[in-house]
Image (cartoon, rainbow, N blue to C red; front, side):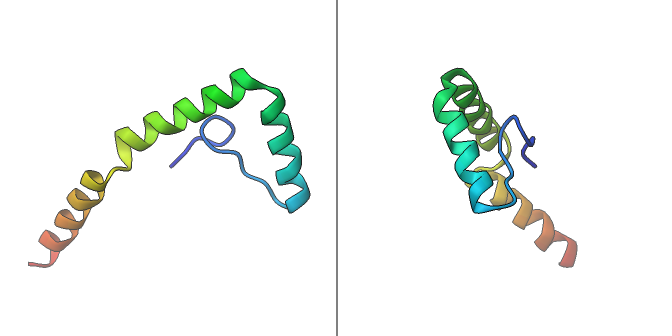
Amino acid sequence: MFAAGKEIFNVNSPGEAVDRYRYLLAHDRERQAAGQAARERVLKEHTFRHRARQLVEIVRMYI
């Protein structure tokens, strides 16, 4: 899972999304920090290799 407000920003409406985008465009450090944190999370937990390992584990449970 991604950390809300740190690695991902959840919104509940199109208007809220626009507000969030505008905020992030105006706050370079916060935007870049969130992007870097999300990138690190993806590389640490969500690569093709991670999914392949999970798939192998699932298959092993049934054979």
